[in-house]
Length: 160
Length: 349
Ligand code: HEM
Ligand code: FES
Image (cartoon, rainbow over all chains, first blue to last red; front, top):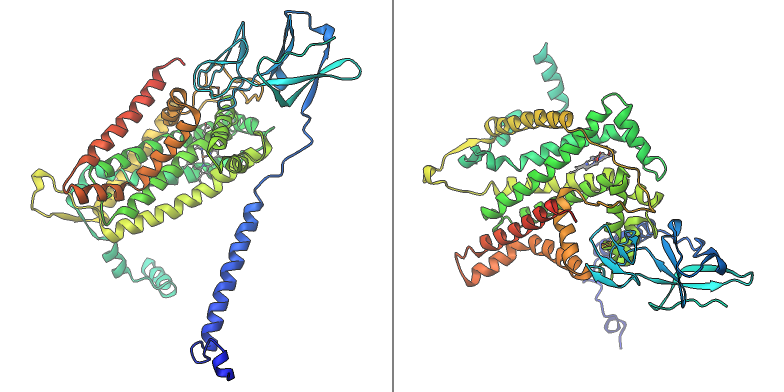
């Protein structure tokens, strides 16, 4: 096989000028594309992992049966029932407004979702019930709520 | 003296004045004498008002979580004529949205989006979108309670978009919650990205209009006359009269109903009565009466349909020539939006 046959591209088909033109175009296009990708990464914010996800709510004895405490800073309400404690998030599951804790119900001012005393949707566009949050006891006896961990609706925390 | 100066300038900047005269005196059809056909120039004029007042407001506005609200209060209460500039900016934004909507209606119901003007219509719908986004981001900058909760709801709406939602929301809000990052982002959008997009789109829009000419339209009393008149000076003066009237109107509104400043944003309390600006009433009501995902997908779909309507209309007319069903669909959609808007306006909750 001669060298001429081996070479797929015949030299006279692609001139040096054409080759350089194409090469320049592709180089320019790909570097532009990469630059664009890079600049899209720029506005994508890093997440801040050190925002505390838990907060202390006090001792179990601070919650005699029937008490209800709203932790406004955290948008959480803690209720004490005969069968245990529960922490319900006050952030509406529709689009994130803070619901108002009323007697035996929660109302969202934004698109009018109404939740019952356990956070189930009674009326309105919210797709899910209010979130129930995990309560746990620390070694020193204090209780803490984890706003990043939800528990199934109705799960009560029983303290000894 | 003046002639000498003109000559000196023209030697250095050789503009062909004859050509310019010819270009600007392009004949336009007679129906442009009607006010209804001058609505396209109105938002363009108001945009210039927004740029001028906006640049002035930017002298004192500080886009940060801690200072935004105070800087707007400073503009409103202490800077000489600050309240007036802010009010003109606010009213001009309202007029701008109204005129863009009216202009859209005029174009739709006269069928002026049909071939070969599909691109003109598409740039137009993008302009409508940019205008609405400017209104939303501007409103959020004030950082009063309604701004904060409006932005929260919008961020969470972005998040609810299937597939790309998470990324979109994070890009828009600049994190997980509305904070410093959010305000700088909204500011960059409001005073940088969106105005530039607006200028580019207006330019394309006008080039396309110029290339195709204004759509021909015959009124019964003008049938067959084919009358035209030159763009400059005739039509130019019509637009100028609109501009002057608008300026007077803007100042009157700014003085009689100055822009107010609500309660400072409080991330811990959603106020009991929450409403967006009137131009978002329809989405707000739609969110109340439909499920979340459906509300978002249907709104997106609506704007997409609107964007490509010229092609859908052409498809319909291919199978049913001369069909004017588009008019009925348009009327149906518009009345729907109107009903949602009025419903939200009169409803307590
Ligand atoms: C280059 C153009 C623009 C610049 C530089 C600009 C700048 C600003 C600034 C600094 C503010 C915050 C101060 C304040 O609230 O009074 C603001 C507010 C606002 N802007 Fe703009 N803007 C521009 C165009 C527009 C356009 C085209 C619209 C709407 C169609 C618009 C609508 C608004 C609204 C609704 C507010 C809130 C007004 C209030 O309640 O006080 N802006 N703008
Ligand atoms: S955010 Fe609560 S109903 Fe929409």
